[in-house]
Image 1 (cartoon, rainbow, N blue to C red):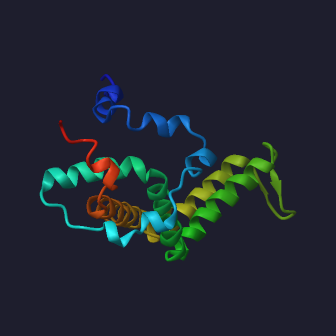
Image 2: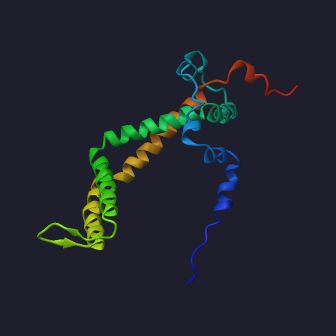
Image 3: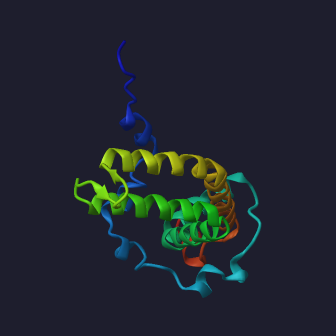
Length: 174
């Protein structure tokens, strides 16, 4: 039976070059071009789009213009979702700390005096504890909430925030 080959290039080519700049930037330079909060929350520029074409045009413009602000919103919503789900935060710290601790052993056995555990037993023990706790912490629901909240916030802002006056006339055909 042959394995299934997914043509990643065929899927990502539909997005064009929109995401290529995200991969080539460092995290510091990504947030270096944050727009000021007064410009991002300019209530004078909020208006209902007249039709779907105008909403699509606004979304296309604002997604590129405010991309760093939208990335910051995603980070803030991620932090909020982890802080409001302390069990998931605990599981993340438990797994990270467990993997770090097992890695610090460097392949040696853990000798507690009354028992001796090799690395495969430690990984198995971590798995036995983390998987049920992970399911109980509902990471899928948290992830879906994060995607939904980010989508509503970002696309809502992008659709209702009008373009600046100087850019509104540059797209019209002469």
